[in-house]
Length: 128
Image (cartoon, rainbow, N blue to C red; front, top):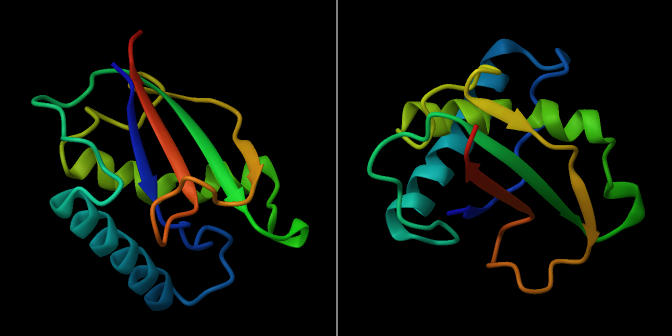
């Protein structure tokens, strides 16, 4: 059964251009948003009873203007704090290649059908 999570756009914190304290602040803010959304089920399904041992993860990145469309490698890099949160909160058993297979991101212009304040659709498909 595939789980679909609608999440806010993760901050761009992995490029080494920010002070470590600013990176930590941005990551904490994202984790707080994800926690609130999971608790209120705002764009989140029910959490699995046990962490998913291996998941194929798909990312659909919604953007409004062409200049806001990032490169696929930047999207993958920005997913790291999201994967960390999924592991820490019991959605995934781990974020290594033993537990996760990341697909190439898909890009969609517009946010039709998305919950408010979200721009990324993350799918977790259990399997090997």
